[in-house]
Length: 251
Image (cartoon, rainbow, N blue to C red; front, side, top):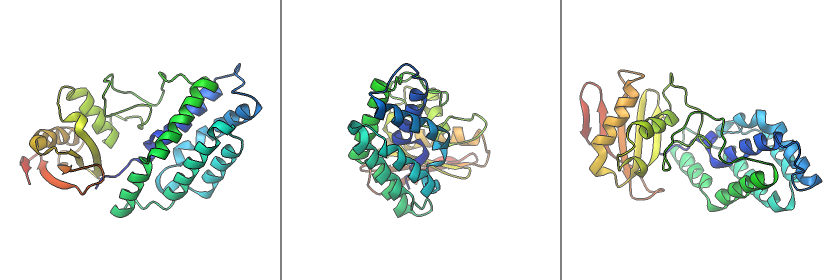
């Protein structure tokens, strides 16, 4: 099952980046009084954004977003409405339910949601002084086609196994592997990790060995799995599995 990382979406990152940008723009009127008030409210939300994810989306968080939307300039008010609609739907997200997770995955990558996030980011750059090249969210990869993006993903703790850590590990150790950029699905179940992508059967063993190398670096008894699917919303099919004792084998 593809399990989207709700706290690491481009939408949430946009809000965090806007908050940082607006907080550092003392000499920018942010497009007028409405724009200034909009930025001020985002700054007030900055400390709370880490809680607006998955099943932690509560009424208070939604009320804060609605307050921001009410003060938003005309050019981004509709975009804020799109995001609020998204968070209202994600409030009922059940991470243990595969159907719910699949629905959430689709919502996060809805073209309207992506466009709203891009519009808000552009507003932050043009009106709030956001530097799109600056990020303080954690270490990242220098690759142009990296799986791990420090602007959108959570900071990686090198002492704790995580999905974002796995993506960064791939970027740093498998830069030339053709399969790296074909991966789009990552799952973690305790010490067991999975990775998947479209039509990755031919590289399943290599991917499995890479996942296993990362996972066993934290837990010797960890397992690895590789899944394939025909499109981003199609059913996943297991194609390889592995552990430190038996290595990786095709399913």
